[in-house]
Length: 458
Image 1 (cartoon, rainbow, N blue to C red):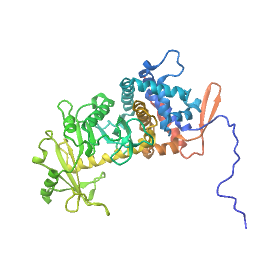
Image 2: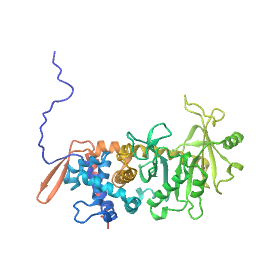
Image 3: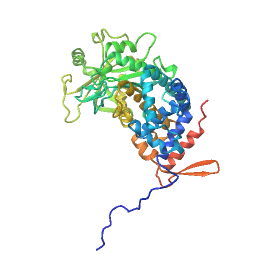
Image 4: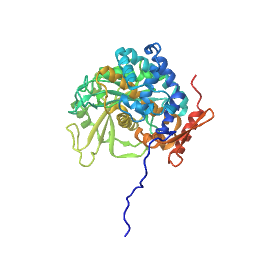
């Protein structure tokens, strides 16, 4: 009988390895920064905060933090993983220098936030031009999803408060541009709010929508080609009236609470008025129907608003609510889009569920916890998180194809960014050789070749 020696091979561990680069796949993000011109844009925006005779550029410090978060970091000290690889990421500031910059920007309040956001908006315009047919607005329309996020606080941080889910923390309101089924999405708004902030606060939704529109290229900041989608938290008179205001002319698709008035109108809808709901592939959605409500139920709402309701058989085991009827689960939304079948409009609104994927990606990219104590500091952190998410959206949009383009941050890190490499210096050139046996090395090389073909900024 042979003695079992274990399932894994035993290796001898020694320190002192040279020219070995960890996180070598992070060069994808570095090249994306270079081609997008994000480094020069952020540096120019933060020039007022650069002190005389300083060694490290504030823009580079902030961008290093965003790269660290994109690679999986969740606090300021995680910038150390970049500092350990100067051949790939260049000189990186010390932890005290990073902390001092965050405090300085936080003390500047809205001035620093406006500078960072303006730089992001300008770079976003350039990236969408580089992406061409792969850009979110390539089809002539842009969809922005607004949704709230609960961020748990594990200590008594400023503005942390009990949430509606009986947890404790903050309740930011986020906005994401939907890249459609062939991509992911990118953040365009992040409004930090206390944990007890209301879900359906119209003023906060208006502010978040303004932040989101300011991030879009100028031609998408007003007009029907821009669609604002929300869940029922956005279904308030003030917010819908703001979206439909004369001169703004935005398209909207917002969820609505099933009130008693709406419920009574649903009960009066004849069976012949119900239309089968459809799936994204065009097939009929089994057990679901849609109908449009008219009459006095629209009194008090902006002109041109349409109210569409869906009834659907609940999933096995699901409990019905008081607002449901005849054993059917009822949901309702409002839109001002005309000339399209109500089943198509209902499908468009249902696809708002992709915002949950964007929130999951944000939680995995620095939003699971706000690491700083003061609210002003955490507002800067939210901007860093958004820059990291921008890079994780722009890199696939510019460099990846097929199913790889739809990978979420966790999978990008596991398969692409954590690739090991060897740094070889020959003459005046430095070459980063990726591990030949790594299954996704070919994807990394192909992505870098696509980035190399893009024109340099300026």
